[in-house]
Amino acid sequence: MIIQEQLRLFIAALREGDRRRSFALVREWEQNGLPDDLLYNEILIPALVRFGDNWESNDQGVVEEHVASQIVRHILAYKAVTMESDVSPGKTAMVGCVPDEHHDLASLFMANALEDAGWRVVHYGSSAPVRDIVQAVGRYRPDLLCLTMKSLGCLDATLKLLEQLRATYPELKIMVGGISQPSMRAILAPHVDVFADSLTHGVAAAGELA
Image (tube, rainbow, N blue to C red; front, side, top):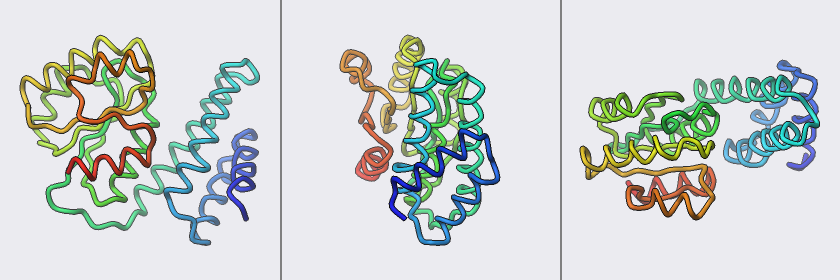
């Protein structure tokens, strides 16, 4: 079965809000040897993008978009629990959203992908204040902090966080994903080691930083 057909089937299941069908498809593809990177990059993420676009164009309501997001969230949790990968020494990543960011699915994708690549991952999710993130870095001492950002309204808090992190932990490697606007990247660039353009690029960049 080609990827486009798998994507079509998965989107159809999401549109029906059919959790069992969605999970069954993922398990079937898993048993047939579909790699996680293809599942994430060619099926799950494109499906979420489709639902997000439909919501923005008023082709469907927010509940339908939330239903699809929750199904994907549970799939990512399943993949995290069943993952079998060896953790490499000296590769600990702390992953989560920038302050004031509530969309945490991108951070879940990155957490899973980094674990699959041999990282020990501490995932804190969303809505953490600047002070608490800075304190947590001191507690967990990660080799890499991976932040995801979707909302433009998070810029001021993100800049404050990065400035404090650089002042407190100058050796910390920092990666930020989800930002495509050149103007925003230019503002944050002095405090960021790399901007991740995609999930695949983020994993590769993390390996280079390590």
